[in-house]
View (cartoon, rainbow, N blue to C red):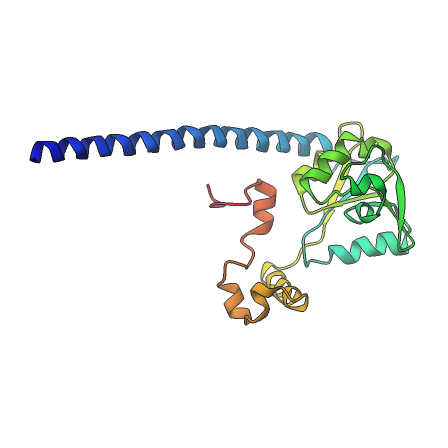
Length: 226
């Protein structure tokens, strides 16, 4: 009986080892794929965005606003669109109810009017929208006077060495931004935080976790220090 129990235990341990090995192999493949994607995005930033000290005497570089939530970027976007009458590529142009938008695809870029202001008919705030805008040649079309996106690296991939983007942003103290986000969520009646106090929110899983670092490093889940 004892020998049989030992054999069963060894078989069980062998099965557990086999189960552990397959996920590890899979994780290694996933890690390699994620690393390749991060490398590709990093190269896109280097090739697509103008350097800080690079001059642009002919003003060919396209302004690229890295939008950080609750940091004043929305106000900048509104001023440039509403007051300076610039054509903006953000999420707004994709809200027009055309047949192409309803089907989820756009065959060509065009400027659309929303509430009397001009936008390109793409969504530069989502991964799918950015891929679509890139495929249609948003930067080379020169339709947008301003590109806005919270996705810094993916947004940078819209540009190229011949159609550079020039990045800028608005920043805010992270604690002030977190507090502002809490009251923003409560104002818009988000059920998960509706009955929370600020201290509860800060200790809950709903509070943001190093959003800027995760966006820049392309690590939206897991330990940001890995």
